[in-house]
Length: 87
Image (cartoon, rainbow, N blue to C red):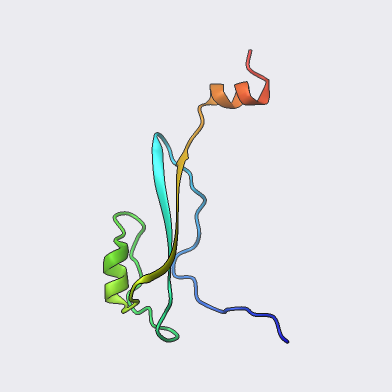
């Protein structure tokens, strides 16, 4: 039996969570495409991206999975404290 894999086209490259200040929310949503190459409206930017509008514009239907997490940049003092190098 051959391995299971999927081939696709990245519309927007992945960026690591990198909040400048405060707590930031990150959500990854997975949609099952109704057919290949069904995304016709590519996002113009990450700023003010609207998942619901993207799904409607590209006829994606309801999400099949999602992951949510918060990220916060640690201060330099906290990094040194945790590493045991704070003086």
